[in-house]
Length: 309
Image 1 (tube, one colour):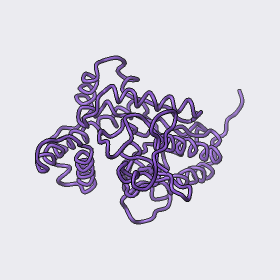
Image 2 (image 1 turned 45 degrees about the vertical axis):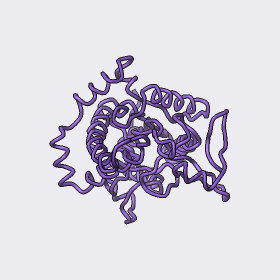
Image 3 (image 1 turned 90 degrees about the vertical axis):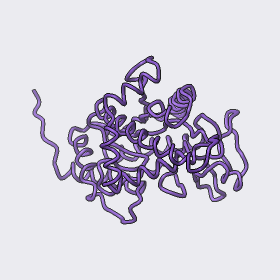
Image 4 (image 1 turned 90 degrees about the horizontal axis):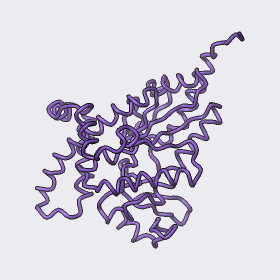
């Protein structure tokens, strides 16, 4: 039997640091401080585990749920150029990691639309169509380092309401516990306020007063955070050693690494809450459809609205 030698820890540390340095320019955070790779010990340890075993680094990214139901923000209910660019970015990031760590990397996109469908007021058939189109784009564009994981992979063909109930009952924190955390933890409070703002902005057909809408969205925001925590626990159960990415802003050194997919005016904008604008200088930015319409003309791709230019 051939002898094996342990990996040189200095080499492991150097490779792990170099991988994290590829992520740092894309860190999604509201923290104005700059930070080096050493400020992210949690991620360095996780990455080092893969490097030491010479295995592909597995990242999980909860997100890509569905398009916003507000037609002033998006072009429709299917993925468009914003998603195409974001998927290509994630795949290219994996390719860049492969230049440093020969075993490479992969990103599992944990599409969470069905987890929140009832809370964000998006029909389940639109969520299915969105997730299916993500998988089709990954295949069509040959983004071989990406895959999609959703509740269908866990609970098969159960009714969507039953799937949501299963995830919530098994994994979600209690409401009283969460309310206390919002009162006492600055990061959770910021997350709660950000989600409340998104829910208000995503509502296009509310017939009551603005204050009534805000009350309803504050109530739903607690549910969104509960389900988000539950989805995170489920992902950890099915992908136990993965490096957790997040589309929400994350503090320096947090267990989750916030990642910015494309340029946007603020740290909260995502491709599924916006439209893509191709600027004259060749760069891309995400913004609400209503704003993009003022700056460019609509471009179609494969017969569907795609972006503005």
